[in-house]
Figure (tube, rainbow, N blue to C red):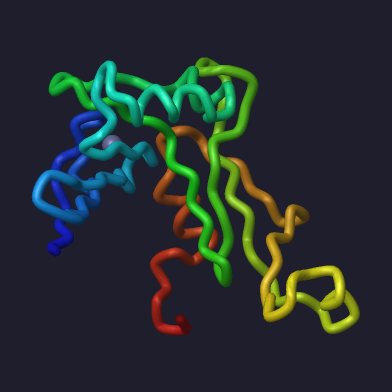
Length: 149
Ligand SMILES: [Zn+2]
């Protein structure tokens, strides 16, 4: 298994995180455009078909095919103790990234969460980012701060 940064086939940026999880399987997540794909997301594949049936409408609208026939969709990131980032909006021409920070669950609310939970997503601090500012959204939730994990 090796993780590398490559050129993104969707946006052309150079911050596409590529993860090889087996002989013929890799996942790509671009920190530039926030889109993701994997080896199974090719035209006509069963996996892609399934995705297209279960994805939220906006995500479906935003799926694009690159020059290699790979289909890219917006990522949905959730890091329990940091926060989450998802595509949010009416349609493909009118959407943004929404980043929500995780906060420690106050003691008095503990009983409303599954046992062992320590963080909750605090919608009160949600921030919206332009579609090309995915990196800023990652930064906002502290996805790059690994020292306290
Ligand atoms: Zn990209």
